[in-house]
Amino acid sequence: MPDQETIERAREDAKKGKSPSTQAGEFVHEEIEHVREGKHGARSTKQAIAIGLSKARRAGVKLPRPKRSTTSAATRKKARQDERAARRPHKAAKKRSRATSRALKRESRQSASSGALSRQAHQGASHRSKTNHSRKRGR
View 1 (tube, rainbow, N blue to C red):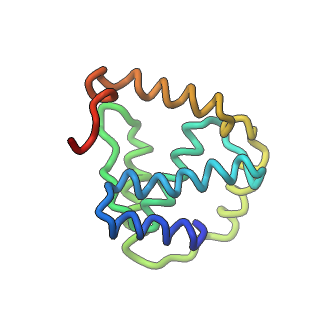
View 2: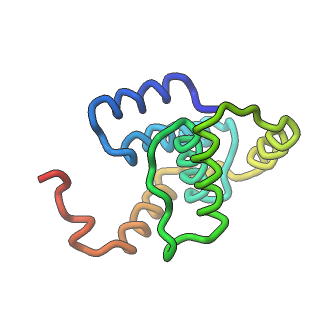
């Protein structure tokens, strides 16, 4: 469950007319902080980001679905589940929730280091065209 503060920051971004990815960034930032604080770990930087995006979708951020060409069927299915969960109130299964928490606690904290985040950013940029990641947005 995301912190109330994070949800508020995302709502403020929505009110200001900022993009859904900017709103979701608040949840990703929170997840990175959780890993850094030692609340839990993550197998990779990508996993930490995915957890944040999942929380954002469940909180009602209108993120576009992942593209077919770049993601697995399981990831697309999870995104659909998250969108559905946002529409209806639900209670998490206690056993599954605890199992997930325990598994994440065993994972490394290195996935949220500045070096790991930098590598992930460079890797993401390499998949986009040069014009795409050098272009100034909104101008």
